Image (cartoon, rainbow, N blue to C red):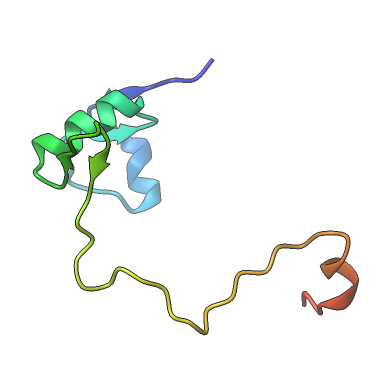
Length: 81
């Protein structure tokens, strides 16, 4: 059973370096996440019903970035450290 919550700050967040917040949000439903995003003016609802976000100046990845997943082929051919 998944939990979707908005919670008042609790002492346990301090151990994560999260301090001085009014509310902590986690595991929001897609609908609640969209509503919160729109209320904060961080995105808009497109004509199609999709949530549209303007990411600003840094929208792409560096062409030299690599993301390699360990699997049965790469496990033997890459020195994973």
